[in-house]
Every structure is written in C-alpha cells, then in structure tokens.
Image 1 (cartoon, rainbow, N blue to C red):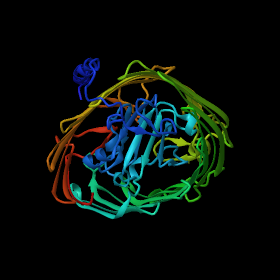
Image 2: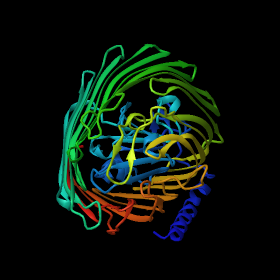
Image 3: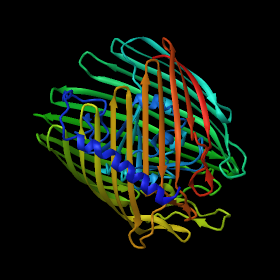
Image 4: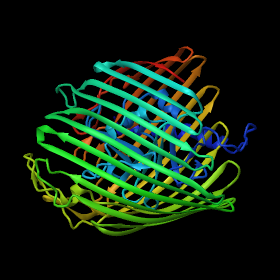
Length: 608
C-alpha cells in the first residue's frame, strides 16, 4: 500500500471523527447516567468490575454480538487493527501468529482465559493461532502495562478471553455447521443452563481446512483443530461459590517442511466467599499446557504452568483494597527435541501484590504495587499509579504511569546449542536479566448515550532488551515507543459503527532503527446494520509498511475488506455468510509469507 495514500486515508478518518468531539459539547436528552453498551463493564484492567470510563485505562471490549456477527475463523482476524493492536502471521489458518500491543513483542503481551495465563514457556509468547473463537463469549484488550497486577510479560498490555456461563432456565442446546473456501468445514455444539444455584456450559467444535499456500507457488497447507470446553459453577446459600473450567484444543497445522501437532489445555478451579459485607476472598488453582510436536525436526516441546492465586478484596466506604499472592511453577520437557534436553527444566515465581481503588468524586485514584521473586533471574518490583478527573457528566481525563517486566523464556536462558543448517546457530544465555519497562500515558474519553470517543497518547521505554548477539542472546538493547490511539463508536437506529486509528513509532534507542513487525499507522472500521430479520456488515482494515523481524526487509502495507450478512429465517434458526478479503488482495505481514485471498464461508445456526 502506498504510504502517502495510507497517510491521507488516516488523516481523512481523523477529520471524519472530529464531529463526534464537536457534538460531545452538546448534552444528550436521552442520557440516563447508566452504563451503556458503548460504555461496557470490564474486569481485566483493575481486577474489579468497572465501566470503560471508570477503569482509567485504554480498554477495548469485543462482546458476544461482535464475535457472532463477524464469526472469524481465527482470533487474530478479530484482533487485527483493534486500537493499539498489531498482528503478524506466517500465513493463514493455524500458522504461527503473534499479537503485539503498543509496539511491544508478542512475548511482552499477556494472554489469559478466565483469569488463567496461557503461554509457551519455551517461546515466551502465547500460541494465539490454536484457539477457536467460537469457544469464547467476549474478549477484553487492555493496553498499557499491567505488571503490578499480573506479573511478568504484561508490558504492552493484557488480552483476556471469557468463556460463556450457563443462564437460568431449562437446558439450552446450540448447534452450528457450515463450510466454504479451501474445503473448509466448521462445526460446533453446546449445551447450557442453570438450576438450583448450579450453572453449566458444555461445548465442542471442529475446524478442518485444506488451507492455502503460505509461500507463492507453494502447495496448500492444511489445518485442523478440535476443541472441548466445560464450565461449571455452584453458588451456595451463603453466596459462596466454587467453579471449574476445562478447555482443550488439539490438532495439526502444516508448513513448508512438515507439520506440527499441538495441544493447548487449560484447567482451573476456584472458590470465592464473602467473609463479611466488606471482605471478599477468591482462590484460583490452575494448570495450563502448551505442547507442540514437529516430527520432521524431531522436536517435541512440552511446557506447563501451574499457578495458585489468592485475591482478598476489602470494601471501604466506596473504596476498594485488593491484597493478594501468587505462586507459579513453570516446567519444560525438551528431551525429545533434535537439540537435546534443556540444562534446567523448571523454575518458580512467587509474588505478593496490592492495589487500591479510591473514589473521591470527581477525582479517582488507582495505585498498585507488586514484588516478584523468580528462581531464574531474581527479584522484580513493579508498580502503577493512575489518576482520573471527571471534567463533566460526559468527559473523563486520565493520566497514568506504570512499570512492567518480561521474564526471559526457557529458550532465552537454556536453549541447547543448535546449528539450524540455515547459516546460523543459537544457544541460550543463563545470565540474562529480565527486560524492564516504564510507561506514561494521558487520555480523555467522551461518553454519551449513543456514541463515545477515546483519545490517548503514551510513551514506553524498555531497558535490558533481549536481542540476538552472535550465536546467543544478551541484554544489550533498549527501545523507545511513542504512540497515539483514537477510537470511536456509535450504536443508533440499527447502525453500529466502531472505528480505530493507531499511530506507533517504535525504535531502537541506540541506532534509531524501527523495531520489527510493527506498522506505524493502522486504521480499522467496522460497520453493521440490523434490518428486521436480517443484518449486514463490513470491516475495512488498512496498515502501513513494517520491517520483517527475520530478514530485516520492508514488508509493504495493505488494505483489506471483509463482508458479512445474516438471516434469521425461523425461530431459533439463522444463517450467516462471511467473505474475508473480499477484494482478493495479496498481502503479507511477514516477509514472503502470504495470507489467504478471497474466502467465503456459509454457516447455519440453531439456538439463541
């Protein structure tokens, strides 16, 4: 995509959103002061339910309606171009993917499912490509450091996925089946309900495709994924609650040279109780596994993270105080790899943390502090401070400062010496320190009954950056990331519009070179319309060029259009058509790895 044209397009969008800010000065007669769909309740930003404007954070909620309307084949398609979010993929359908928040790497952004952290302890980041969007009810994207709440790796932000809960009433079944381009087939089914204080949700899904080439003139590379989900909870007469979550994804993805068999698994149990009107306690025990086996390379990486987390919340005259502790055990089994076993295959991390949420209307204050003690690299202290001020009924000004760190992965620390046969070698460095960051941001939000807008500027400085040095890695680099984000939305008269404009200037502090895999400019528009039993929608995404992280070559910018339509043709029955990349553009986010062209899918749904 021509950079000049991209810049003009972004400027046009900025001017187009200006009327929202102008209208903001005019009170709306329909205002009720109650939370609206455009001011959603979120929990990830502050460990407590807060509306978007009360959270003092840059946060995006992708709700159930959004997920069902767009019906994406992958989570990365849903996240691509959201405010402050960038996505890189080595092709389509289950191929290696990374999600970047505010110019940080995928390993500097945290993925959670219902409060349970999910990642590969060897690679350091999450395997985003192996999660089926149909297993989730909503997603919260919090931009900015959250190290003082969640510990390591939450430098750029946190993405939390939420699974559905059963609702009161008779058992409710749901079924979906369909397919489309590239011999793709999709099936899913669920059963949910609640009775006598017990809520339940059972679901399964299957995705199978012959795929498309990942390189020009290559062969099709397939992908299959089978998912199962169980969520149970019971609330006792004294309001105490216990619950269980089990989620498993299993399948295989092909690439040039072979295929990788994978398992993503999350298991968690929790118990919570209100000890008094002013004291609530919750304990969560979880186990998360990431397994990837590649026979062609004789590689089998099996990583597991076990966590115990305790949160105690005290309610004090409109204020909240959270005091907690967390203990994590990481383990790696790399004995079956072509490289040999890791010298050290486990480590622990113990942490204590506290957060205060204070409401001195019109001023609000949030402060948090956390101490981590890690067996591999020592102690880290992180903290954050956020201040909010209600300018009037509709506008909130916020400013915050926060620190975070990224823990070196097992590959960074202990990867066995390997000659890849491609002209380079690699070996871990057990003397690495954790990467550290400090971030400051200032933002303002306008919130009204039928629309909102949010504008923020920020800067993040990263020290002790881990980079390749010869055949190993070392803490020899630093980075400076500056950015601005503008998001806006409206939901009126059957029209739903969401718009996001992102500018990210990420560079090496010493050389001034751009950081890899980050587009400087990005724009996304989502427009949907409901008409009786029909709905139609479209998404437009455009991004400027980026530098490839492997080849260091420029990857051209691109623009794509996705279309969708739905029809409720009988009670409980509906059909949906989606057309991804409708204009059949060839584009890359990683050098020489092409994404799928035009792809159409049809599905039929039974259920609520």
